[in-house]
Image (tube, rainbow, N blue to C red; front, side, top):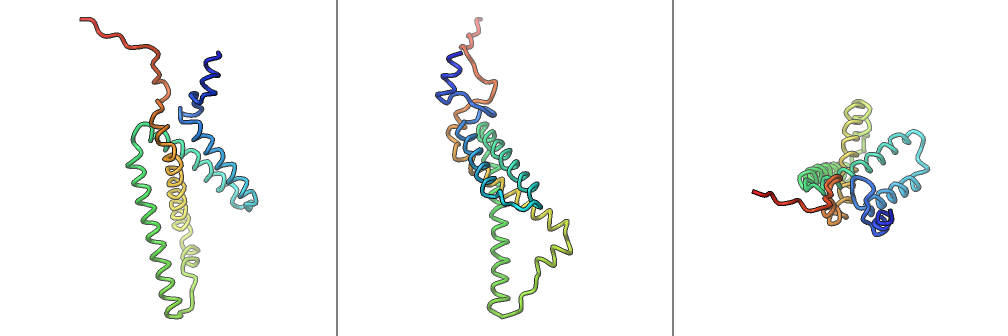
Length: 169
């Protein structure tokens, strides 16, 4: 009994998916800060806000598990490639607006808002995909901070208490 509490005090006991307690505390701190900062969120977006927070927590835990089993690089590179593509598209659109409306002095029409009203399903699905990639990238980045301690941890159920005897011929 004492050993279990002593190991928990020393930080050997892991809470969730055998991930480092510091990762779990960091996730909790980030969630607390987000809820505190955005407590003035309009009622229209409360469900989406809590869905985004839940998605962040689950994706961070998933990223930690994937780091532990050594399969995070492909996923991380894929999410970073999507993020870079989104950033490039936003930059090109901003550059287009700057060139057309600032340099040439053309009156600015509401291109994006009119397109969003005409195609609400496409706009919602694109916005959701962009938000998912941004949240997933943040989750991977948080889990990467603890990569060394996650890599040293073992999956649940892989603790061996005694040596395996050699086979006798």
